[in-house]
Image (cartoon, rainbow, N blue to C red; front, side):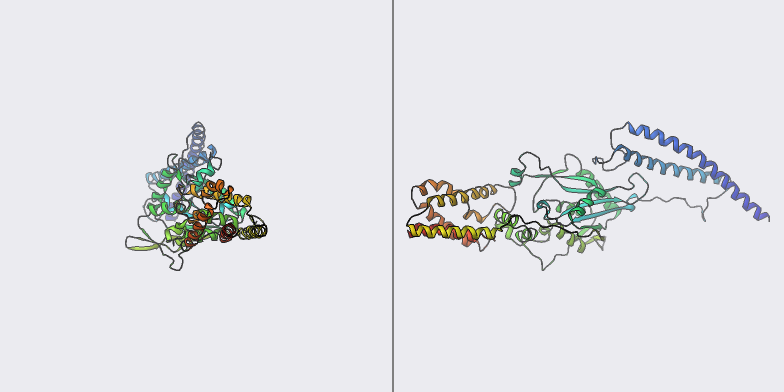
Length: 467
């Protein structure tokens, strides 16, 4: 009986002591929240968020972050005070040992870093897909609790002066931006794109490395970069920053049966857009027909996603998969494919050839050449040639050597006066150009319908020397 009464006495003391501390600290918390909230509203800087350059949070969100931090600190003090009081009253904390109540927890334990891959949709700017990084803190309390942001290297300003001209010369600037995950995903769901999330298998130290790298990249002097279509884009940037953050080496698994050229990959992405594919084939030169390696293939987000899934990280004598988990965030939706135009490039080329042959027949019957038709063809040929000549000086790496310039170049513009006077000098030059262009087809893949246009030009040589 004595033991039982002593036990109840101890429990009563604990209960009274706990109630006393609880009431005191409740009043302290209320006062602290009000004081700190008023103080915070006067500040104009971003507190409580380690990416200081992100400007997407309002002052209320900051207040929530800071007060959560203060709340955890005060709760810790409450429990510490209760533990001390227990000791002063000869009581032990409610545990089976006298160990510390709380052990130190690494805040990175609750952080997930993911590669987000969005499949293409049918808008012309999104035919190649998109990649981004997601930083998600799953913890419910603390200064970074609930952070869920997507870091996107694909931002650009289409309204910037001379945007198209700068893009042609390879002088386009893209930049890194951050947006809440809840705003990022619905955009792709609306267009019917699938969204896949690959959780990267990072240690806590590697997460800290990545955290520092992202914060450094977000600085105004660093977030803008010179975009390169094949070698430095929204897909290669996330890959590179992940790889640099690792404390080991990534062992990539090359796909031996997959060695496409840049041109073949671009054509596949534009398979539903004939004129876009034709334009790319005109502008891309000889270098676009070289076989690519794994690194080059990863300019396409879908290729990067597949390679990440097979990659291993070698560190401290052990291997671990680079991707810990893969999730289908948004399933593929319905996409409406609208044709670029009623006629394909091949159909258009055939029509031009038929017109050329008809004109040639009429000329043969009338025993004369239609100079107006020659001039029209020469102007069209020369204007396309001007564009290809300009692309020689572009910073795009695959446009400097373009054999299409053998067929389309500015030379015919200079020969128009001589053709009007009835001279045939230009047609001798044109014959040489067509022969060289045909030989160039051994190394470079030409656009669809281009041989029909070459036949159209060849017909002018025949009629000039057959009359």
